[in-house]
Image 1 (spheres, rainbow, N blue to C red):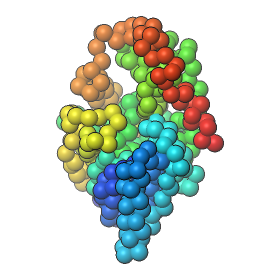
Image 2: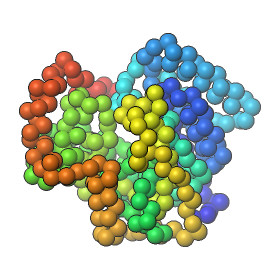
Image 3: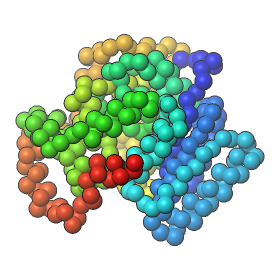
Length: 321
């Protein structure tokens, strides 16, 4: 995969209060040759976070002056929460760039990650089946030297184009109540439809579940590397959804060898093995999810009245414009 001639893509770093996490990613991006680095910080919720962000901004200014690193920073005027905070950052990034790499402040990456994402975007930018290039590989023994196509994008470090981001956005916006319960007799799709519905209704504060469901509905794919290129350290006090250091968090980063096979279509055996492993070890999907998209409607209505929910995700998302 070594190619010193490629122009590494611009990079967005999404942060909140992890000062060292953002600075480490800026250093990694600069070392890899990222020409333009964007940092988006969700608005602080208290004085402690405000001071942390002030410290971060001062240290970024020092980096600009001492190391001549080109960094553009945006700080939210108010706290938007996990889902809309991430979405807002991505929208801002793609208002400035036509393609790029997205990272969050709890991740660790090295040069191979940036090269892989860049080469992947270049190779598949005109392939309408591919929406995303991802850096996480939890099961490297499945891949040999080739990439894997999957309908389950892994958002711990990824890349895409502005055009495809707009397609993803429109797909999520197009989800409705009927589309989220039509697959309720399939445990896997029931799992995703339930998660997507809860996110869209504001019951849980996340954006990736409706995205995955949209991948399924529109028959889209993400590209996964043969080895793991991203380590997630997001199990600290700032974590929103991952509070324990358990698989697949903390995975070691590997380097891609000299040989890398860019598959031009789905290799069914590898895709199925990868996704089956995700279902059993990461998402733990079983037959208990058989009717979950239907039964959860009743339980959610009881456990999460409107007063305990955020406003609908698409409503908050469209409010960005």
